[in-house]
Image (cartoon, rainbow, N blue to C red; front, side, top):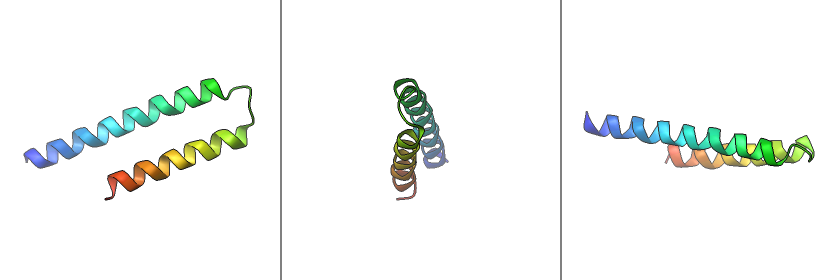
Length: 54
């Protein structure tokens, strides 16, 4: 039970971090090309996926 709770907390934290990063990236890359932003977000998602599914 405790392990499950910990896992859930970790997942929530990861999601929050992702959201924050995405918002930040969008704010920074507003003037830049959309393609670049998409690539950055994709890489972030890949990293997050790898961490979660380890």
